[in-house]
Image 1 (tube, rainbow, N blue to C red):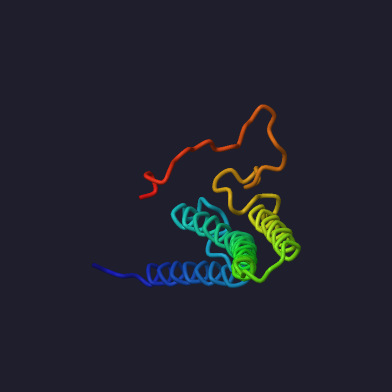
Image 2 (cartoon, rainbow, N blue to C red):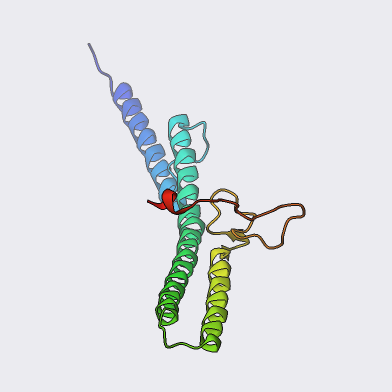
Length: 168
């Protein structure tokens, strides 16, 4: 096959044009820091970029909102548990004082009043909440753990009878 000088010139011009277009594309990518300008240039890259962007947004929400919220929830829970633990230690101490035979009636009444206050403290700690949601109520975060008011027509007394034979 015969190659003419015109064919060589056309081939050289074609290669130069192709290289200039490639350099222009690379310069555009470098300047805009984007691989494609329109989704029609490379649909697969466009789909991957959209998927990456949505995943990035999910991770950002997780880092910025969910993790601090979970940490605050755990801190609130831990503080309430620590407070209840301290109150239970105090209750144990008061109970040990109460079994002492040397206490007078007035001292025992004082112990009973102190124990009632500690009971109320446990109730308050049991109703601990974070962001308007109670911590210790499971999935019912809109209600409190303890009863705030007596419900009408509700009897909370337990009537259980047993004698000495039932204990053995």
